[in-house]
Image (cartoon, rainbow, N blue to C red):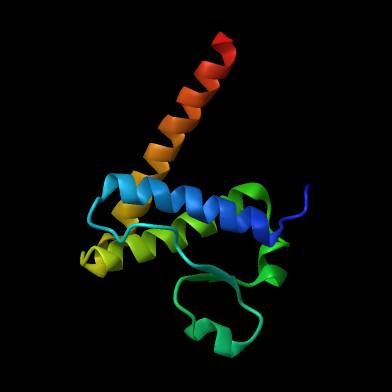
Length: 111
């Protein structure tokens, strides 16, 4: 299993955030702030924070789940939707990312 780095988490988060922005154009433009949670005070920062000690113990699928869940929470709240919509937001993001991944794989096999 490869080591999960903060840069990897930040890249995954930005990719998921771009999908969310495409799906819900009313979301704020630009990148989502991503930071490492090192102390309790860090949790007051704006954006998505990750505890690297927790994330490094996860496999890739669990990391993807956590990233998509965090982005789903922000996308739901920032577009003013009911917090009960987080699961639907998550499902939509997963579907869009899966579609894009399949399309990219299809393009790669055509070359």
